[in-house]
Image (cartoon, rainbow, N blue to C red; front, side, top):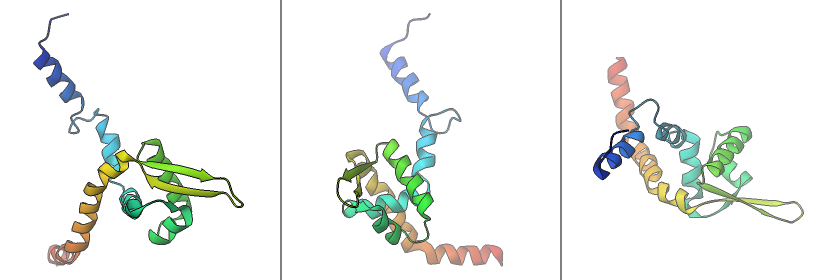
Length: 130
């Protein structure tokens, strides 16, 4: 096995996480955070923990099943916490973890950009289709 310098080892480590490469594990994460429901759920949790029903009302159009799947995936990825409070009925709250909060500025910026530029996109689509 050839000897490598520290710089070569660092470069090899960086190459392992090059999202342009098909086998890069970061692609799984990009796929997750690129999902529209993930973005909307993270944005909805920006102001603090919410219950499943509250999230369902805020994120219009998401089915209960899709919301549950999205929350489970976000919890698995360490972006959301699920807190169960024993009561009758049981209370379950979802909130952002520190890792989830670190992603929030990115997904909030994309949401804000979409809301700001949707008319321009619609105009471009009309021009393209016409």
